[in-house]
Image 1 (cartoon, rainbow, N blue to C red):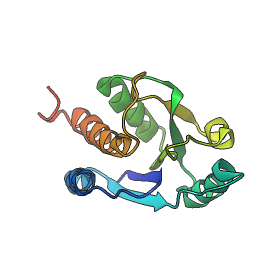
Image 2: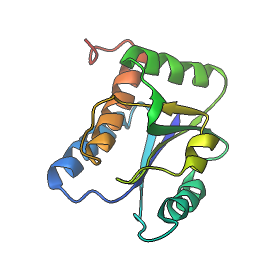
Image 3: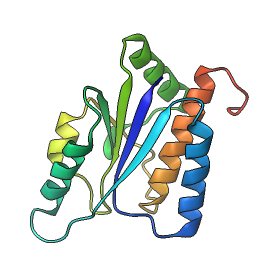
Image 4: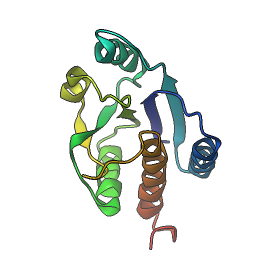
Length: 151
């Protein structure tokens, strides 16, 4: 079974974000092993580098890592599904998705990632990204199984 770890810098505070994240984690239970790791958002000098250290310590290894950042490539839901499917065919069983803090992500994390994904050229509330990623992972796995969620 595919192991997916979503590593997020910052804690969700709003109940509505927590609720929808829990719903998608529940839906994903039969499709993969999903784990969400919340890391402390650092402050002060070297903030992003301290966060990078924590991110690197949290990665599933060996595994493939995706950094979610504005510089990433935008994919359709079908393309994301195909990409995850290709990794599975190559024998990859561990995927990491990383969401940096509201101030971004260390260049080191972006550089070391196997690929970069952009959700949109638009700006969204930072914590909404977690909801969007969980939903898109769920959608991608439903597409792969040819189930009816994706229309």
